[in-house]
Image (tube, rainbow over all chains, first blue to last red; front, side, top):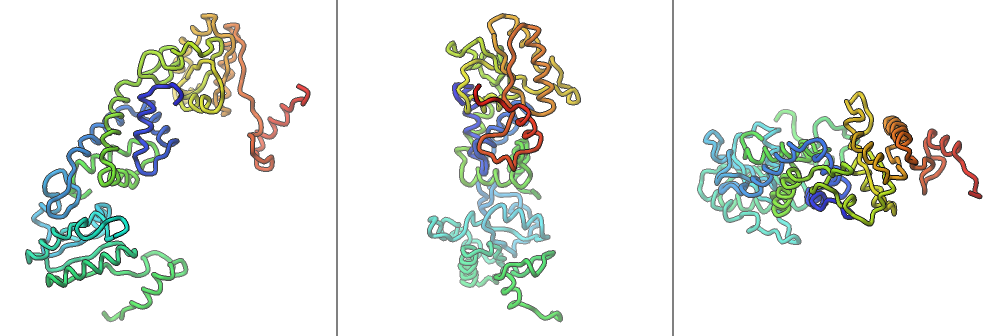
Length: 201
Length: 201
C-alpha cells in the first residue's frame, strides 16, 4: 500500500482471513464497502464481533449456538428417539433444508482423521456415548460424508451404536437423482449396481 | 436457518454485503471463522468498525484517507508539478505498484456517467479546477480507463487542463506487453497500428 492509509491496508489484510479471499479480492471488498456500502460494513463489524464472542457450542449436540442449548435440541417437538450424526454444522443445515427429518442431531465437528490429530475424544465421543446410554435414542442415523474418512467414522459410529444397543442406519448411496448414468463416476455406479433392490419392496 | 442460532444467520446475512459473496459463500465464511479462525474474525470486526468510521477522503486528492490529508499528498518528496488523475483508489494503487511515478494524484471516485447521475460536480471538478488554478501543476497525466466513459472523462479533463493552461498527457494505448498480436482485440490492434511511431524517436 506504499505509504497510503494504514487503516485501509489493515482492513485489506484483515479481510484475507475469509476463506477464498486473496489480496485482490480483499482490496475489491474494502473499496466496495468504503465507496458503496458503509452501512453494510458497520453492520457486518457489529454482528461479527457479537458472533465471535457469543457463539459457542450446544451442550447436547455440539452444534453452534449462542445459548447453552441450540434451538433444535431445545425444541420439544423434535423426536428424541432419532439422532442424526453429521460431520459439520453445514451438513446439518443441508439435511434440515432438504429433508423433513424431525429428530435431533449430533455434530462431530470433524471426522476421524488421525493425521490431523482428530480422534474420538475430539469428536465428542464422551457426550455421544452418554446420550446413547441414556436410553432415549432408538435410531442413530449416520450421515457422515461418503469419503474415506467419513466411511471410517461411520464404521466407528456403528460400533458405538451396537455397544449401546441402538439401531444404526446409514444414508443410502447410489446414483444421484436427475443425473445421467453416463456421467456418474464408476465407484458410485458400481455401488448402485451392487445395491440394486427389488421393485416389489 | 430453520430455527437455528439467530446470531449465526445474522452473521451469514451480514457477510453477503461483501461483493461476490452469495448465500453459500457467506455460510462457508461464517463456519470457517467460527470453527477455525475466531481470532481473525475478532480482528476483522475491530478493523472494519474502525475503517468504516474513520476512513474519509483526502482534502487535496479525494483518495481514501483516515486523516485530513493522505500520505501521498502529505509527502513533501512527491513532485507537486505533476498531477495524475485516476478514476478510483484501486487505479491509483495499480499505478503506484507498477510505475515509478513520483508526482501526486487526483482521484475522481468515478467517471462521467450521466445515466448514473455522475457529472463534473460529483467528480470533484471544483477541487480539481482550484488545484490547476494554483499554478503549481505543470502536467496533468490523464489515467482514466480506456472505456467509452473513461475516454469521455479524459476528453473533459483535457479541456479543463487547456482552460487552466496546463499540459495534459494521456497514458499510451497499444498492444499490451507479453501478448501475441494474434490474440489482441481488433480495436486495440487498429489503434496501435494507427499510432505506430518511428524507431528513431
